[in-house]
Amino acid sequence: MSRDDAGIAAKIDDLFANWQQGVCPGGQVVVRKGGEIVYENCFGYASVEHRLPITGETVFHVASVSKQITVMCVLLLQEDGLLNVDDDIRSYVPDMVSFAEPVSVRNLMNNVSGIRDQWELLMLQGVRLDDTITQSDAKDVISTQTELNFPPLTRYMYCNSNFTLLAEIAERVSGKSLNEFARERIFAPLGMAQTCFKDRYWQVIPNGADSYKRVGGELIHAVLNYGTYGATSLHTTATDFMKWMANFKEPVICKRETLSEMFACPTLLDGTKIHYAGGLIVNDPALYQGRPFIGHDGSDAAFRSCTVRFPAEDIDIAIFSNTDTVAIGRAAEKIVDLLLGVELRQAAPQVLPDFYDADFADEDVAGTYYSDGTYALIAQVVSKGDQLYLLEEYGAAPLVHVEGNRYRAGTANYELYLGSTAGFRFGTRCIPLKKWQPDQECEADGLAYAGMYESAELGTAYEVLVEDGALYLSHRRNKKQQLLRTAPDQFIAGVGGSLYGVTLTFARAANQAVSGFRVSTGRAQAVAFAKRN
Image 1 (cartoon, rainbow, N blue to C red):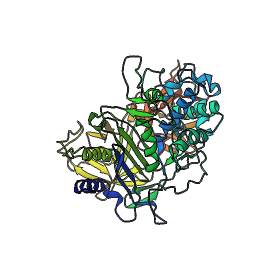
Image 2 (image 1 turned 45 degrees about the vertical axis):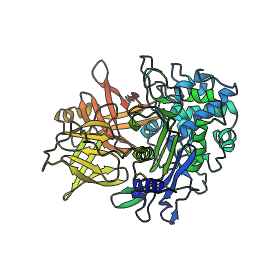
Image 3 (image 1 turned 90 degrees about the vertical axis):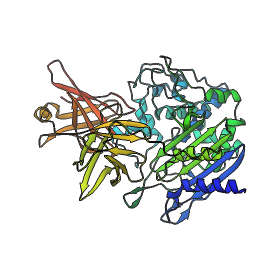
């Protein structure tokens, strides 16, 4: 290894300093340039309690990186003449379609179907991430949806249901399980001996890593019991996955035309070109400084994955982790700069969001903050002495003051801006927040909303309660959450234990009596609930 190469390797090591802090979770990093591995390292522990270090043989759950493999299975069946991706999905799974609009297989591949997202539907049913979620659970909730978020090809919306449906189509057409078909046509021919789809939650994965989050000073298990696959549940190593990525450059398991079809980004009906195709993000100019690329990342529990290929530079990067303490997408970006001899970018004078308040001081910022846009966010901030905490799914995370009204939640890759001008920032995405104040008008009208509400599409019920003048949304598993009024007949509530909430819009009959509500999450819009008489 030359001195320059050793210097680059040391700088890449430094990007993963958080995975080198004693007995902690970590990950695998493999980098290839010009067909040669130029960097490969493992950090941290696959099992913290058993002190099992991560090695090149450690197998990771790679979450949404799975989607591209599922798409390839479908495209191989098209190569075999057994299906056509422009067919309506009713041709293959008629029993799983309850909505009226035609949706093509290609629409599923490109996330332009309008179908509601399975995870958010399951969350509304009261299913938690650490439940033993089966493929049947996902298929059942998809099958009962009678409405779409939007007509196909009118919008782009990331949706896991699309890839569960693709997995089902591949299984029905091939007569084999998705894992069997992928093993025969992809994993075995490419020599990916440690790669599989985990399709039963009880399945043992040899050399599998556990996932861990850090909440405050405590390291905790982020439990994942998935038995659902297609959208997720690929298990692999970074070394194995490099063999798959090599197929993008010199196809072995498919025709070159098949790769072209996989990478072909759709154009929406209004002429907008999107940057998602075939289970991959393709040449999104907002990422990687506008360099052309093909890639995807993944996030389930505390597992994180980032895989990206830069065709012009012939660089491939695979980073798999069992924790969320490193922003691995940003690390991949810095690795490319190092390999190309680009000076690591100095933090350019940061453009802070409009809700940044440099003069913020001595303001009482504890309370509940919310947004009421497409993605409903709720941040509950509490104070204990001089320390502020953000209430999260796994407990209270200490907020670290950066400057002005700007805070970070521990190792999380987002920022909160608190006080009278508030907001949430994740990367370049900024969402204004409002600090909730008690609504006297809502208190007076509370009894009009009280009652039980049922959804035929979800097969579940919520109760709206009035307690001490406040409104609450109650579910047998999602517990009781306060309803915060944001507009006439519109409320926001936390559901599922994360920052993401739901928006409820109540409907009224001709006599102005409340007759039901529509609930929306980021990826499941306007699910109808009717009020019991």
